[in-house]
Length: 226
Image (cartoon, rainbow, N blue to C red; front, side, top):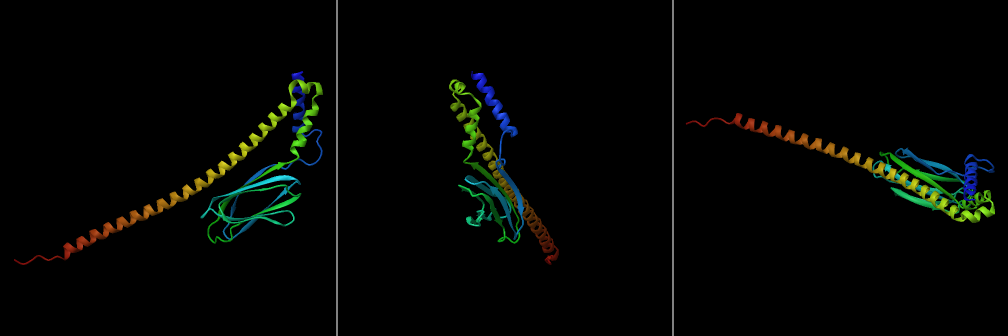
């Protein structure tokens, strides 16, 4: 009985993976993007969202002087949901979402010289996922559900899926932190090399001036008559 339930569950998951027997549009996938924002420019992105879902937005400035940028988030109706000025990073959640296109804007107008390297990620969590997951239990007969405790299997699968998704999000966020730290270290290394070269040049110039001064001093010195 347990083997039959496992086979039925595997077949149902396989059919869902290839899209057999499903109707309607596919779910919106999470996404991440890294782009270069020029100095004095503003760039906006549009992301479609279903109704009654959860949208989480994370962004980080991982390159550029100051590591800051202006950020705004608008709903499909044009309502300003989030407005931040000169921030290095931020995390914002919108729930429940409205059906339509959300607008995310990154503004670097306050900077006249430095361009910024910006990373952002969009994470969707549909409230309808739990209702869709209920359908996989229908692939098993009632008597088999009693033997293999289908509810326990469903909870284990959902817990594993949630933890895997959160692990992927954390790894993506750690990569963004690593990129920002690497860019900052490279900038610091460039400054250290520049000022080290400048100090060496000054030391050499002072040494040359001292030698020339001493030579001039002894050259102009006349012998005292006896």
